[in-house]
Length: 393
Image (cartoon, rainbow, N blue to C red; front, top):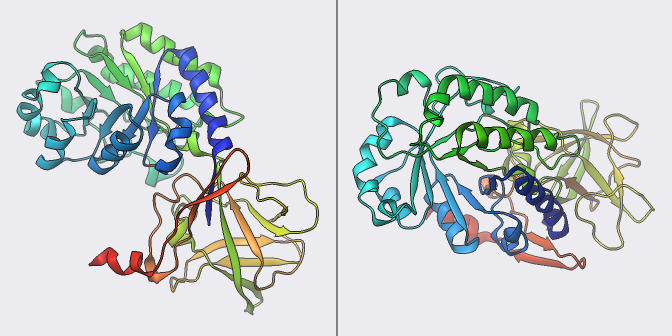
């Protein structure tokens, strides 16, 4: 089961509300990181809206969040543009060829002419600060964003915003160096009266305890004053980080070539793919009746949690029930031997998990639940065989 804590979500969005109010900027939820819309009513009051990666996410924002909708996609088709012009507030393009293709269509729309719809370009400052190449949009030959040389002498009629997104799980020091690169390459555009907003994208770990929020506030204020623009931030992970868990059951335990193996009811590749893609090592807890102070983001009444270590006498390689040989979560040590029927809890599984899950191999999909502030668990979605069967027909 995926379980998301409303109380934890609200703790995060309260921090974000304080930051955006201190900085004088706008802050929206990136749906690509967290789109569990049943939780939206609990956090919408702290945020300014949502950013969408395309038409379907934008429709979700319109239908269930009800505030400002910021839309950016690497490419749109004509049907996308026709629908998005009717309700999105920012429509950002990834290339000049896309903008030129749809410019007349967009600029003829009544919402554009009234100023309710504004358009921008995603830019690539060519300044890499991350450590994982798959998440770096500034690599040579990147398909994300326009470089400064491509904008030289270009006709930018109709545009009023620039958008960059180069961070991933990073602190505000990386934002500071990125802003310097943006100023060097695109500052002349931002200083012109034509451009009225700057979207700084996501990847800001604002709600992490170590994150330098004072520097973020300073940077946003300086940017607003320097260019005279509205500033937008669109974190996803900072909103949902440390707010949810994935509960799994041990379904088999055996030994192979000197390794103790435990097969679980959940899969890395199907249910938490960032464990393989990022990659990262999740925090794991063994549920037992014995007392323990360690607790994951969501706590079920009457349960105690023992954190798993990296080494020890009861070391197990945890794997999923798919046929993928690499469907391995990692090696974890527990305070006692695992047995079939044990419950393991994987912490911090609300962001970039539910939005990426699949029914690969016909593996059962975990239900989704909300834990309300009074501790009540509400199952909001259960999955069955028809969800697997009907997906491809």
